[in-house]
Length: 147
Image 1 (cartoon, one colour):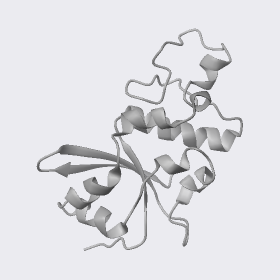
Image 2 (spheres, one colour):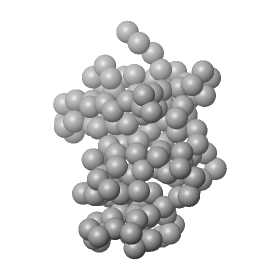
Image 3 (cartoon, one colour):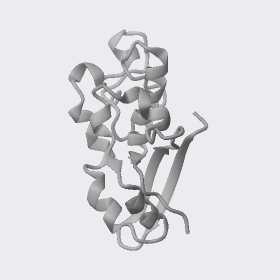
């Protein structure tokens, strides 16, 4: 997971914009998030144009904000119910399970996404934890530039 980047993008009017993005693997802009393709989680990760992301990194965040979609802490509501609750809570294996065992604000550190495949569970858990931090989890599409 060393190809995942947590970024804080300062904005003048909206405060800090927290982002988690995966670096591309070759031509695949999804990088480590590629495992999410074909799952219910895929549609919750916006693919933002690379130029809008680059402009945000250089102080002009409005175009990026326009394409991000809903705030991170509400995205779990778009998952089917069976994919919202922590795997350990569903299996009754957790002694500290509470009503906050969802991938929303204040998600507990012990949260595990309720998927069987271990690799998919690792990535979906990272996504849920990022949402809990208020981070937008994004895929940066083609067109990214560096000045």
